[in-house]
Length: 423
Ligand SMILES: *Cc1c(COP(=O)(O)O)cnc(C)c1O
Image (cartoon, rainbow, N blue to C red; front, side, top):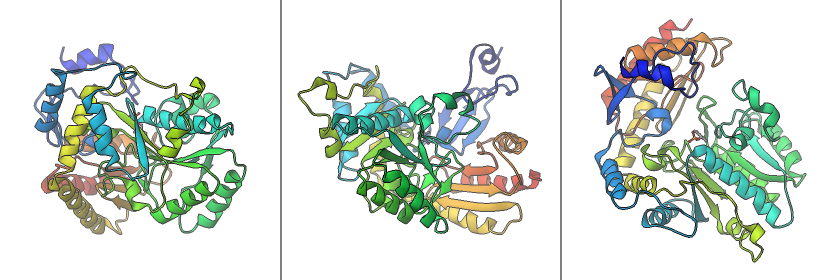
């Protein structure tokens, strides 16, 4: 039995209907933008392995950082104890985030980074004796798969089995120039209850929704109104962080101050699971008290894991090199040229582009994730050894920044060809 066949007997995969799924592709090694399978086929990882990889697979600088750290300190408890990788990472990240961000709280992944932010904001109000019970989020939002993170995400066929157990959230339509006055009215109705603890959003790009892009000026205005009513703004930068949108963080497009930031995915360059929630001094201070019950009682066994912190630091070394922003600018320019090339294509409903992200929404009538078009597109690309996972009728690229121009061209050509199989 090869690895794929052995897998099929014992493993349960995420987001996979195990009854009908093809055998998984067994990857034996990665290098740069490529993943190699058992037979030696090279797959171009055009979606950075679920949006995590930034500098390429098995990057030697990151690999050796983990190796060195593993031989020094692999892990230790993070309550009552600390270590250099966690301290240094907090220092270096805070220097890159908006300067009102003052404290770093560690967890394991994007969903936990969101859970931590939500719990911090609820307890921020609780500790002041002014409990607030509501969260505001955007329609079509995705913030993760744990219960709190699911609660602030869109109610969809994916969440249906769990909907009865999710806490109630007020959803706002994604703002456009056309609907903005109406969105503001809905927003104000919620804010005026003075019961809205926080507003959580994916800044500028709603990833899972199909790379929906919206204007920073409209988001700024929403945050400004939130602040008028004390509502805290949580920027979920789990996907947008570390250069995805063209700037290091999407919040750099905003003028309004945000109160909390959630990071994961690109944080470790895609090497290790790690989540970070940062907050302002004002939020942090709401937990400082002689009263022990005002403590933030949250933690995970692997909080602040030294291996994950060490590789995140190594990733920041690369972020600081000129090649990092040069690559992002190069990919963005290529995407833009492709968008122009594709504009007006009969099968294309919309092309959305920001930084290293480009999404082509195919005009396919009434489609959803469950429509067979999505599966046919996935197979179409896979047969060409391109790893792409269309979101319903939205084909997108979100590559590691080391991807070459000729590999980008391979993706663009395949996208154009794929439009032919769309009826
Ligand atoms: C992926 C994602 C999450 C969840 O992160 P996980 O590490 O998969 O739990 C949260 N928010 C956003 C915006 C994401 O894209």
